[in-house]
Length: 205
Image (cartoon, rainbow, N blue to C red; front, side, top):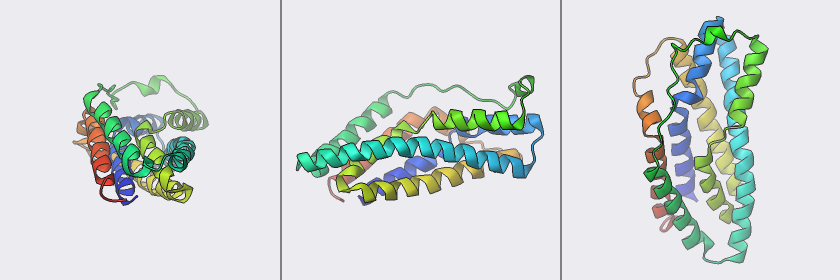
């Protein structure tokens, strides 16, 4: 279980660094002339929506994992780690290209009220859960739903604080030079983490 917790924290950090989680919001905020307080609130709501969508799906998969663990004695020690390694290999080998979100995009051409922008970002983030962490929730279900909820809390803290912090840094003009590195190598980083967690799960429970 310790390895799963480490894995979900690591994935939460990696995914918070991906520009498409926060750069469009910064671009809109600057085009619309929002204050630091306003963008902080919207960033928090957007991150909360993203985490909520991820966690809701994770709880469902956690229940599936719990059911599998009850039916198959080897699920915790063999099947779950193997599944993590398989998912990791899949992500590692399909490092798909990402769309680049640039602050130069003409967001000013899409003038909307702040309330509409908030709705757009919240709905968009809720409907795009972090699918990469769901395999960890599936594995955590083998240890019981209390562990699933503990992982959900850890993921929420890391993701929300990470996204809000990056939004504020970018909004204040801090150039995040390595952000595009994470965007380009997101799948490989995710795959590497899942493979590592899967291997550790054979030895640490």
